[in-house]
Image 1 (tube, rainbow, N blue to C red):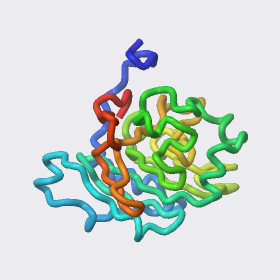
Image 2 (image 1 turned 30 degrees about the horizontal axis):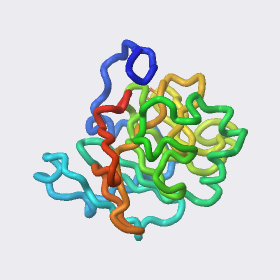
Image 3 (image 1 turned 180 degrees about the vertical axis):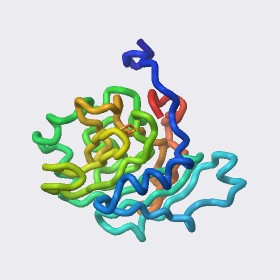
Image 4 (image 1 turned 135 degrees about the vertical axis):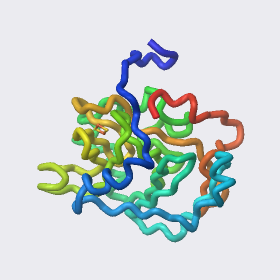
Length: 213
Ligand code: FES
């Protein structure tokens, strides 16, 4: 057992996200909401190489939209959740599907260990790497009778081996992925700007303390 109480599991090698983008995009298919990579928000290569924090302007993000920004070689998913999406997080029909609904495994900072897994309920910030073998989960924010699987309630679907997560990145029971999607350290610089890679004052959460990246 590790410090969080999670059992140590011998895992196959994790995958390199950057090598998997193309394959993952193809596998997710047309049903997923397209990933919107925001190159203009990314800092220069030297800044990225140093792993420095990056600022994300929230103003251009529409309600329900997800944008993706690369940070430290990993995709950061930023979603402005709709009111329906926020409400779904406490829907008993969704919660009963989840393996760790209260985020007890250390996959997020203390300020995201809550029912919405975020600093504020309407904004979701995740590391978009499936906790099974590191594929790219597709964003399917609306319920569907058919897509990506029958009776889909909303959330993320990983096309590689079928892992499912809700709209807070909480993993379902009975899927290959063992943990919720990670949440990186971040803080609000203003009401419309977040900085990924920095904690709020008084917090010391580090990416290296996440159980499964
Ligand atoms: S990598 Fe996501 S289900 Fe296997």
